[in-house]
Length: 102
Ligand SMILES: [Zn+2]
Image 1 (cartoon, helix red, strand yellow):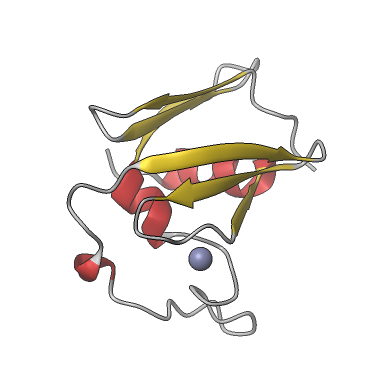
Image 2: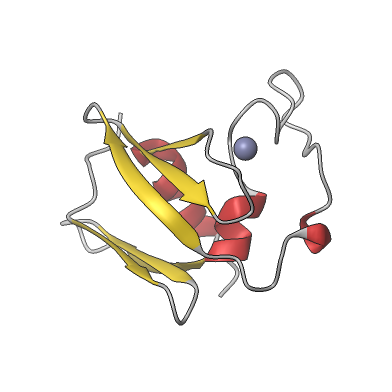
């Protein structure tokens, strides 16, 4: 179980979510990348991990409409494409921060 990030900051005009941890890991995750990696069951097959949609179809002007902490293990991200069921656990955010292409 990963530690919670020390910082989660949305930069709406740059469309990146800045996430950093006390151990020095830090990343600016592009919204479309984050949205494409949404871990919810309607975005990724629970058993195979296969993505259920084409990330190229995501809107270019994707914005965050809300962030809500879930317990002390995850944050729920609500997007302006109407999707708000993705719970990004700290483990998931750390994985994405490490795998992020930028
Ligand atoms: Zn989803």
